[in-house]
Image (cartoon, rainbow, N blue to C red; front, side):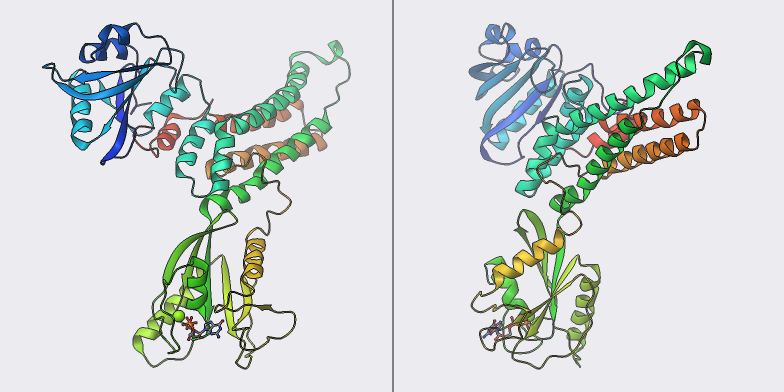
Length: 442
Ligand SMILES: Nc1nc2c(ncn2[C@@H]2O[C@H](COP(=O)(O)OP(=O)(O)O)[C@@H](O)[C@H]2O)c(=O)[nH]1
Ligand SMILES: [Mg+2]
Protein backbone atom coordinates (compact mmCIF):
# COMPACT_ATOMS: atom_id res chain seq x y z
CA UNK A 1 0.00 0.00 0.00
CA UNK A 2 1.60 3.17 -1.24
CA UNK A 3 0.69 5.57 1.49
CA UNK A 4 1.60 3.47 4.52
CA UNK A 5 5.16 2.20 4.96
CA UNK A 6 5.43 -0.57 7.48
CA UNK A 7 9.13 -0.73 8.31
CA UNK A 8 9.36 2.42 10.40
CA UNK A 9 8.15 3.70 13.78
CA UNK A 10 4.97 5.75 13.77
CA UNK A 11 3.52 8.04 16.41
CA UNK A 12 0.31 10.04 16.81
CA UNK A 13 -1.71 11.92 19.35
CA UNK A 14 -4.70 9.64 19.99
CA UNK A 15 -6.71 12.14 22.03
CA UNK A 16 -8.12 15.48 20.79
CA UNK A 17 -5.80 18.39 20.18
CA UNK A 18 -6.77 20.66 23.06
CA UNK A 19 -6.32 21.20 26.77
CA UNK A 20 -7.49 18.35 28.99
CA UNK A 21 -6.45 16.55 32.15
CA UNK A 22 -4.52 13.94 30.19
CA UNK A 23 -3.45 13.19 26.64
CA UNK A 24 -2.32 9.95 25.02
CA UNK A 25 0.39 9.66 22.39
CA UNK A 26 0.84 6.25 20.86
CA UNK A 27 3.94 4.84 19.22
CA UNK A 28 4.27 1.61 17.24
CA UNK A 29 7.11 -0.04 15.40
CA UNK A 30 10.07 -2.32 15.82
CA UNK A 31 12.88 -0.67 17.85
CA UNK A 32 10.62 1.95 19.43
CA UNK A 33 11.58 1.07 23.02
CA UNK A 34 15.31 1.46 22.43
CA UNK A 35 14.78 4.66 20.44
CA UNK A 36 12.72 6.30 23.19
CA UNK A 37 14.71 4.96 26.16
CA UNK A 38 17.49 7.64 26.25
CA UNK A 39 14.82 10.33 26.75
CA UNK A 40 12.99 8.51 29.54
CA UNK A 41 14.17 8.86 33.14
CA UNK A 42 14.14 5.08 33.64
CA UNK A 43 15.90 4.14 30.38
CA UNK A 44 16.93 0.67 31.42
CA UNK A 45 13.45 -0.22 32.69
CA UNK A 46 12.01 0.73 29.30
CA UNK A 47 14.66 -1.18 27.34
CA UNK A 48 14.06 -4.37 29.30
CA UNK A 49 10.32 -3.98 29.98
CA UNK A 50 8.12 -7.06 29.73
CA UNK A 51 4.83 -6.87 27.88
CA UNK A 52 1.98 -4.96 29.53
CA UNK A 53 4.21 -2.97 31.87
CA UNK A 54 3.40 0.50 33.17
CA UNK A 55 6.40 2.75 33.79
CA UNK A 56 6.14 6.01 35.65
CA UNK A 57 8.85 8.63 35.05
CA UNK A 58 9.85 11.74 33.08
CA UNK A 59 10.33 12.29 29.37
CA UNK A 60 13.11 14.76 28.58
CA UNK A 61 14.14 16.67 25.50
CA UNK A 62 17.43 16.22 23.58
CA UNK A 63 19.20 18.50 26.10
CA UNK A 64 18.00 16.40 29.01
CA UNK A 65 15.42 18.93 30.26
CA UNK A 66 12.23 17.39 31.60
CA UNK A 67 9.20 17.89 29.37
CA UNK A 68 6.57 16.16 31.50
CA UNK A 69 5.84 13.51 34.08
CA UNK A 70 4.35 10.58 32.20
CA UNK A 71 3.18 6.98 32.41
CA UNK A 72 4.34 4.66 29.64
CA UNK A 73 2.25 1.62 28.79
CA UNK A 74 4.61 -0.81 27.12
CA UNK A 75 3.75 -3.61 24.70
CA UNK A 76 6.33 -5.98 23.30
CA UNK A 77 6.18 -7.59 19.87
CA UNK A 78 3.26 -9.98 19.47
CA UNK A 79 1.00 -8.05 21.84
CA UNK A 80 -1.12 -4.92 21.94
CA UNK A 81 -3.19 -3.19 19.28
CA UNK A 82 -0.80 -3.58 16.33
CA UNK A 83 1.13 -6.67 17.55
CA UNK A 84 4.25 -4.53 17.05
CA UNK A 85 6.61 -3.27 19.71
CA UNK A 86 4.71 -0.26 21.05
CA UNK A 87 4.45 2.42 23.74
CA UNK A 88 1.53 4.55 24.81
CA UNK A 89 2.55 7.76 26.56
CA UNK A 90 -0.01 9.19 28.96
CA UNK A 91 1.05 12.78 29.64
CA UNK A 92 -0.66 15.90 30.92
CA UNK A 93 -3.13 17.29 28.41
CA UNK A 94 -1.35 20.60 27.89
CA UNK A 95 -0.86 21.89 24.36
CA UNK A 96 2.71 22.78 25.23
CA UNK A 97 3.52 19.31 26.59
CA UNK A 98 1.88 17.64 23.60
CA UNK A 99 3.76 19.85 21.11
CA UNK A 100 7.13 19.28 22.78
CA UNK A 101 6.65 15.53 23.05
CA UNK A 102 5.55 15.22 19.42
CA UNK A 103 8.55 17.33 18.37
CA UNK A 104 10.83 15.05 20.37
CA UNK A 105 9.45 11.91 18.69
CA UNK A 106 9.85 13.41 15.26
CA UNK A 107 13.38 14.66 15.98
CA UNK A 108 14.58 11.22 17.08
CA UNK A 109 13.43 9.64 13.80
CA UNK A 110 9.87 8.50 14.32
CA UNK A 111 7.24 9.33 11.68
CA UNK A 112 3.90 11.02 12.25
CA UNK A 113 1.22 8.39 11.48
CA UNK A 114 -1.27 8.64 8.62
CA UNK A 115 -5.01 8.37 9.42
CA UNK A 116 -5.91 4.80 10.40
CA UNK A 117 -2.32 3.63 10.24
CA UNK A 118 -2.29 1.87 13.65
CA UNK A 119 -5.39 -0.09 12.67
CA UNK A 120 -3.87 -0.82 9.27
CA UNK A 121 -0.86 -2.36 11.00
CA UNK A 122 -3.21 -4.42 13.21
CA UNK A 123 -4.88 -5.64 10.00
CA UNK A 124 -1.58 -6.39 8.26
CA UNK A 125 -0.28 -8.30 11.25
CA UNK A 126 -3.43 -10.46 11.08
CA UNK A 127 -4.71 -9.55 14.53
CA UNK A 128 -7.96 -8.30 13.01
CA UNK A 129 -9.65 -8.77 9.65
CA UNK A 130 -11.11 -6.00 7.53
CA UNK A 131 -14.60 -6.24 9.10
CA UNK A 132 -13.02 -5.67 12.51
CA UNK A 133 -10.87 -2.80 11.22
CA UNK A 134 -13.99 -1.14 9.83
CA UNK A 135 -15.78 -1.78 13.12
CA UNK A 136 -13.11 0.23 14.95
CA UNK A 137 -14.05 3.26 12.87
CA UNK A 138 -17.77 2.53 13.18
CA UNK A 139 -17.46 2.27 16.96
CA UNK A 140 -15.70 5.64 17.14
CA UNK A 141 -18.44 7.14 14.96
CA UNK A 142 -21.44 5.43 16.62
CA UNK A 143 -24.18 7.90 17.50
CA UNK A 144 -26.59 5.64 19.33
CA UNK A 145 -26.30 2.80 21.84
CA UNK A 146 -27.64 0.32 19.29
CA UNK A 147 -25.15 1.37 16.59
CA UNK A 148 -22.45 1.13 19.24
CA UNK A 149 -23.52 -2.39 20.23
CA UNK A 150 -23.61 -3.50 16.58
CA UNK A 151 -20.12 -2.09 15.93
CA UNK A 152 -18.75 -3.72 19.08
CA UNK A 153 -20.15 -7.10 18.06
CA UNK A 154 -18.39 -6.76 14.70
CA UNK A 155 -15.16 -5.62 16.39
CA UNK A 156 -15.40 -8.69 18.56
CA UNK A 157 -15.17 -10.79 15.40
CA UNK A 158 -18.86 -11.71 15.11
CA UNK A 159 -19.09 -10.80 11.45
CA UNK A 160 -15.68 -12.29 10.70
CA UNK A 161 -16.75 -15.64 12.19
CA UNK A 162 -20.04 -15.57 10.34
CA UNK A 163 -18.26 -14.93 7.03
CA UNK A 164 -15.62 -17.55 7.75
CA UNK A 165 -18.43 -20.03 8.37
CA UNK A 166 -19.93 -19.16 5.00
CA UNK A 167 -16.55 -19.46 3.30
CA UNK A 168 -16.09 -22.92 4.81
CA UNK A 169 -19.48 -23.97 3.50
CA UNK A 170 -18.49 -22.69 0.07
CA UNK A 171 -15.28 -24.69 0.19
CA UNK A 172 -17.29 -27.75 1.19
CA UNK A 173 -19.41 -27.19 -1.92
CA UNK A 174 -16.43 -26.54 -4.11
CA UNK A 175 -14.23 -29.47 -3.04
CA UNK A 176 -16.37 -32.34 -4.48
CA UNK A 177 -16.90 -30.34 -7.67
CA UNK A 178 -13.14 -29.92 -8.10
CA UNK A 179 -12.65 -33.63 -7.48
CA UNK A 180 -15.11 -34.40 -10.26
CA UNK A 181 -13.26 -32.06 -12.57
CA UNK A 182 -9.87 -33.58 -11.75
CA UNK A 183 -10.77 -37.21 -12.40
CA UNK A 184 -12.44 -38.87 -15.31
CA UNK A 185 -15.95 -40.23 -14.92
CA UNK A 186 -15.06 -43.91 -14.80
CA UNK A 187 -12.76 -43.33 -11.85
CA UNK A 188 -15.57 -41.83 -9.74
CA UNK A 189 -18.91 -42.73 -8.24
CA UNK A 190 -21.94 -40.93 -9.51
CA UNK A 191 -21.91 -37.32 -8.36
CA UNK A 192 -24.78 -35.63 -6.53
CA UNK A 193 -24.41 -31.94 -5.79
CA UNK A 194 -25.32 -31.06 -2.14
CA UNK A 195 -28.28 -28.81 -2.98
CA UNK A 196 -29.41 -28.40 0.64
CA UNK A 197 -26.03 -26.99 1.62
CA UNK A 198 -26.25 -24.42 -1.16
CA UNK A 199 -29.80 -23.50 -0.11
CA UNK A 200 -28.88 -23.04 3.52
CA UNK A 201 -25.92 -20.89 2.51
CA UNK A 202 -28.23 -18.72 0.41
CA UNK A 203 -30.58 -18.40 3.42
CA UNK A 204 -27.68 -17.32 5.62
CA UNK A 205 -26.56 -14.76 3.08
CA UNK A 206 -30.11 -13.44 2.71
CA UNK A 207 -30.45 -12.97 6.46
CA UNK A 208 -27.16 -11.14 6.74
CA UNK A 209 -28.13 -8.88 3.84
CA UNK A 210 -31.50 -8.15 5.46
CA UNK A 211 -29.65 -6.91 8.53
CA UNK A 212 -28.23 -4.06 6.44
CA UNK A 213 -31.54 -2.20 6.70
CA UNK A 214 -31.29 -2.35 10.51
CA UNK A 215 -27.64 -1.37 10.49
CA UNK A 216 -28.30 1.72 8.38
CA UNK A 217 -31.40 2.68 10.36
CA UNK A 218 -29.42 2.80 13.60
CA UNK A 219 -26.32 4.29 12.00
CA UNK A 220 -27.72 6.92 9.66
CA UNK A 221 -31.09 7.35 11.33
CA UNK A 222 -34.11 9.03 9.79
CA UNK A 223 -35.36 12.49 8.80
CA UNK A 224 -38.74 13.36 10.26
CA UNK A 225 -40.62 16.51 9.24
CA UNK A 226 -43.39 18.14 11.27
CA UNK A 227 -45.89 19.51 8.78
CA UNK A 228 -49.38 20.98 8.73
CA UNK A 229 -51.25 24.27 8.51
CA UNK A 230 -50.22 27.32 10.51
CA UNK A 231 -51.05 27.26 14.22
CA UNK A 232 -51.78 23.54 14.51
CA UNK A 233 -48.99 23.22 17.09
CA UNK A 234 -45.96 22.03 15.12
CA UNK A 235 -43.50 24.20 17.03
CA UNK A 236 -45.13 23.22 20.32
CA UNK A 237 -44.68 19.53 19.47
CA UNK A 238 -41.11 20.17 18.28
CA UNK A 239 -40.23 21.75 21.64
CA UNK A 240 -41.99 19.01 23.56
CA UNK A 241 -40.04 16.28 21.75
CA UNK A 242 -36.74 18.08 22.29
CA UNK A 243 -37.67 18.92 25.88
CA UNK A 244 -36.55 22.52 25.34
CA UNK A 245 -37.99 25.77 24.02
CA UNK A 246 -36.19 25.78 20.70
CA UNK A 247 -38.87 26.94 18.31
CA UNK A 248 -41.02 30.04 18.82
CA UNK A 249 -44.60 29.15 19.74
CA UNK A 250 -47.26 31.79 19.18
CA UNK A 251 -50.93 32.18 18.31
CA UNK A 252 -49.86 34.45 15.43
CA UNK A 253 -50.15 32.50 12.19
CA UNK A 254 -46.96 32.29 10.12
CA UNK A 255 -44.60 32.66 13.09
CA UNK A 256 -42.26 29.86 11.93
CA UNK A 257 -41.04 31.09 8.57
CA UNK A 258 -37.84 29.12 8.12
CA UNK A 259 -37.32 25.56 9.21
CA UNK A 260 -35.48 24.57 12.39
CA UNK A 261 -33.77 21.22 12.82
CA UNK A 262 -32.55 19.28 15.84
CA UNK A 263 -31.30 15.79 16.68
CA UNK A 264 -32.76 13.30 19.10
CA UNK A 265 -32.72 9.56 19.72
CA UNK A 266 -35.89 7.49 19.49
CA UNK A 267 -35.60 3.90 20.72
CA UNK A 268 -31.94 4.12 19.81
CA UNK A 269 -32.58 5.46 16.31
CA UNK A 270 -30.86 8.81 15.59
CA UNK A 271 -33.54 11.21 14.39
CA UNK A 272 -33.17 14.57 12.70
CA UNK A 273 -36.41 16.43 13.39
CA UNK A 274 -37.56 19.46 11.36
CA UNK A 275 -40.06 22.10 12.42
CA UNK A 276 -41.38 23.83 9.33
CA UNK A 277 -43.35 26.86 8.25
CA UNK A 278 -47.09 26.13 8.23
CA UNK A 279 -48.64 25.36 4.89
CA UNK A 280 -51.08 28.09 3.80
CA UNK A 281 -51.66 30.65 1.07
CA UNK A 282 -49.58 33.67 1.96
CA UNK A 283 -48.96 37.07 0.45
CA UNK A 284 -45.68 37.43 2.33
CA UNK A 285 -42.65 36.71 0.12
CA UNK A 286 -40.49 35.41 2.99
CA UNK A 287 -43.26 33.16 4.27
CA UNK A 288 -43.82 31.82 0.75
CA UNK A 289 -40.12 30.94 0.56
CA UNK A 290 -40.46 29.22 3.97
CA UNK A 291 -43.39 27.20 2.65
CA UNK A 292 -41.38 26.21 -0.44
CA UNK A 293 -38.65 24.95 1.91
CA UNK A 294 -41.23 23.02 3.94
CA UNK A 295 -42.43 21.29 0.80
CA UNK A 296 -38.86 20.48 -0.19
CA UNK A 297 -38.17 18.96 3.24
CA UNK A 298 -41.39 16.96 3.13
CA UNK A 299 -40.26 15.58 -0.23
CA UNK A 300 -36.97 14.30 1.23
CA UNK A 301 -38.32 13.03 4.55
CA UNK A 302 -38.35 9.41 5.67
CA UNK A 303 -41.45 10.18 7.70
CA UNK A 304 -43.84 13.14 7.90
CA UNK A 305 -45.88 13.88 11.01
CA UNK A 306 -48.81 15.87 9.65
CA UNK A 307 -50.61 17.74 12.41
CA UNK A 308 -54.27 18.71 12.29
CA UNK A 309 -56.03 21.02 14.73
CA UNK A 310 -58.82 19.14 16.55
CA UNK A 311 -60.73 22.38 17.09
CA UNK A 312 -60.96 23.14 13.39
CA UNK A 313 -63.05 21.64 10.63
CA UNK A 314 -61.38 18.80 8.84
CA UNK A 315 -60.22 19.40 5.31
CA UNK A 316 -59.92 16.26 3.26
CA UNK A 317 -56.40 15.76 2.05
CA UNK A 318 -54.54 12.88 0.51
CA UNK A 319 -51.39 11.68 2.29
CA UNK A 320 -48.74 9.28 1.10
CA UNK A 321 -47.44 6.23 2.97
CA UNK A 322 -44.70 8.21 4.69
CA UNK A 323 -47.21 10.36 6.55
CA UNK A 324 -48.61 9.91 10.05
CA UNK A 325 -51.70 12.07 10.53
CA UNK A 326 -52.07 13.35 14.09
CA UNK A 327 -54.82 15.42 15.72
CA UNK A 328 -53.33 17.99 18.09
CA UNK A 329 -55.01 20.08 20.81
CA UNK A 330 -56.93 17.04 22.07
CA UNK A 331 -57.16 18.88 25.41
CA UNK A 332 -59.52 21.42 23.83
CA UNK A 333 -61.79 19.11 21.90
CA UNK A 334 -62.09 15.31 21.66
CA UNK A 335 -60.95 14.31 18.19
CA UNK A 336 -62.85 11.68 16.18
CA UNK A 337 -62.63 8.05 17.39
CA UNK A 338 -59.80 5.90 16.13
CA UNK A 339 -57.38 8.67 15.14
CA UNK A 340 -54.00 9.37 16.67
CA UNK A 341 -54.65 12.25 19.06
CA UNK A 342 -52.20 14.27 21.13
CA UNK A 343 -51.93 17.48 23.04
CA UNK A 344 -48.65 19.31 22.61
CA UNK A 345 -49.78 21.44 25.55
CA UNK A 346 -50.36 18.67 28.12
CA UNK A 347 -48.22 15.89 26.61
CA UNK A 348 -51.17 13.53 26.34
CA UNK A 349 -50.83 10.90 23.60
CA UNK A 350 -47.13 11.62 22.94
CA UNK A 351 -46.07 8.12 24.02
CA UNK A 352 -48.45 6.57 21.49
CA UNK A 353 -47.22 8.92 18.78
CA UNK A 354 -43.58 7.98 19.45
CA UNK A 355 -44.35 4.25 19.38
CA UNK A 356 -46.13 4.71 16.07
CA UNK A 357 -43.14 6.64 14.69
CA UNK A 358 -40.72 3.92 15.81
CA UNK A 359 -42.99 1.22 14.38
CA UNK A 360 -43.10 3.00 11.01
CA UNK A 361 -39.34 3.51 10.89
CA UNK A 362 -38.74 -0.15 11.63
CA UNK A 363 -41.21 -1.25 9.01
CA UNK A 364 -39.41 -3.49 6.58
CA UNK A 365 -36.90 -4.59 9.19
CA UNK A 366 -39.31 -6.29 11.55
CA UNK A 367 -38.61 -9.94 12.06
CA UNK A 368 -34.89 -9.30 11.73
CA UNK A 369 -33.37 -10.09 15.09
CA UNK A 370 -31.60 -6.89 16.16
CA UNK A 371 -29.28 -8.61 18.58
CA UNK A 372 -27.68 -10.67 15.85
CA UNK A 373 -24.66 -9.70 13.80
CA UNK A 374 -25.71 -6.75 11.72
CA UNK A 375 -23.92 -5.09 8.83
CA UNK A 376 -24.03 -1.37 8.26
CA UNK A 377 -21.49 -0.72 5.53
CA UNK A 378 -22.49 -0.33 1.91
CA UNK A 379 -19.22 -1.92 0.87
CA UNK A 380 -20.08 -5.06 2.80
CA UNK A 381 -23.67 -5.10 1.57
CA UNK A 382 -22.52 -4.74 -2.07
CA UNK A 383 -20.09 -7.64 -1.74
CA UNK A 384 -22.75 -9.82 -0.10
CA UNK A 385 -25.16 -9.01 -2.91
CA UNK A 386 -22.54 -10.00 -5.47
CA UNK A 387 -21.88 -13.27 -3.61
CA UNK A 388 -25.63 -13.94 -3.48
CA UNK A 389 -26.00 -13.26 -7.20
CA UNK A 390 -23.14 -15.65 -7.98
CA UNK A 391 -24.73 -18.40 -5.87
CA UNK A 392 -28.15 -17.90 -7.44
CA UNK A 393 -26.37 -18.29 -10.77
CA UNK A 394 -24.86 -21.56 -9.53
CA UNK A 395 -28.33 -22.81 -8.61
CA UNK A 396 -29.60 -22.02 -12.11
CA UNK A 397 -26.57 -23.66 -13.74
CA UNK A 398 -27.22 -26.82 -11.72
CA UNK A 399 -30.90 -26.84 -12.65
CA UNK A 400 -29.94 -26.43 -16.30
CA UNK A 401 -27.47 -29.32 -15.83
CA UNK A 402 -24.61 -27.17 -17.11
CA UNK A 403 -21.09 -28.65 -16.89
CA UNK A 404 -19.42 -28.64 -13.48
CA UNK A 405 -16.60 -26.33 -14.56
CA UNK A 406 -19.20 -23.57 -14.95
CA UNK A 407 -20.58 -24.36 -11.49
CA UNK A 408 -17.04 -24.13 -10.10
CA UNK A 409 -16.60 -20.67 -11.62
CA UNK A 410 -19.74 -19.42 -9.86
CA UNK A 411 -18.70 -20.89 -6.50
CA UNK A 412 -15.25 -19.34 -6.81
CA UNK A 413 -16.79 -16.01 -7.63
CA UNK A 414 -18.93 -16.11 -4.47
CA UNK A 415 -15.82 -17.02 -2.47
CA UNK A 416 -13.99 -14.06 -3.95
CA UNK A 417 -16.73 -11.63 -2.93
CA UNK A 418 -16.76 -12.91 0.66
CA UNK A 419 -12.98 -12.56 0.70
CA UNK A 420 -13.36 -8.92 -0.32
CA UNK A 421 -15.36 -8.27 2.84
CA UNK A 422 -12.87 -9.86 5.20
CA UNK A 423 -9.88 -8.34 3.38
CA UNK A 424 -8.04 -11.38 2.06
CA UNK A 425 -8.38 -10.37 -1.57
CA UNK A 426 -9.11 -6.68 -1.20
CA UNK A 427 -7.18 -4.48 -3.66
CA UNK A 428 -4.83 -1.86 -2.24
CA UNK A 429 -6.74 1.17 -3.43
CA UNK A 430 -9.86 -0.05 -1.64
CA UNK A 431 -7.89 -0.75 1.53
CA UNK A 432 -6.39 2.70 1.30
CA UNK A 433 -9.74 4.41 0.97
CA UNK A 434 -11.14 2.44 3.92
CA UNK A 435 -8.29 3.26 6.28
CA UNK A 436 -7.89 6.86 5.21
CA UNK A 437 -11.38 7.59 6.60
CA UNK A 438 -10.08 6.90 10.08
CA UNK A 439 -8.82 9.54 12.46
CA UNK A 440 -5.11 9.96 12.98
CA UNK A 441 -4.06 7.98 16.03
CA UNK A 442 -6.52 5.15 15.38
N1 LIG B 1 -54.63 24.12 24.08
C1 LIG B 1 -53.62 23.82 23.27
N2 LIG B 1 -52.95 24.76 22.62
C2 LIG B 1 -51.93 24.42 21.81
C3 LIG B 1 -51.57 23.06 21.64
N3 LIG B 1 -50.52 23.03 20.78
C4 LIG B 1 -50.25 24.31 20.43
N4 LIG B 1 -51.12 25.15 21.04
C5 LIG B 1 -51.18 26.61 20.89
O1 LIG B 1 -51.45 26.88 19.52
C6 LIG B 1 -50.75 28.04 19.09
C7 LIG B 1 -49.90 27.73 17.89
O2 LIG B 1 -48.87 26.83 18.31
P1 LIG B 1 -47.53 26.68 17.50
O3 LIG B 1 -46.78 25.57 18.13
O4 LIG B 1 -46.84 27.98 17.36
O5 LIG B 1 -48.12 26.21 16.10
P2 LIG B 1 -47.38 26.11 14.67
O6 LIG B 1 -47.74 27.32 13.93
O7 LIG B 1 -47.96 24.90 14.04
O8 LIG B 1 -45.92 25.98 14.92
C8 LIG B 1 -49.96 28.52 20.30
O9 LIG B 1 -50.68 29.54 20.96
C9 LIG B 1 -49.86 27.28 21.17
O10 LIG B 1 -49.73 27.60 22.53
C10 LIG B 1 -52.29 22.06 22.35
O11 LIG B 1 -52.07 20.86 22.27
N5 LIG B 1 -53.32 22.49 23.15
MG1 LIG C 1 -44.38 27.11 14.21
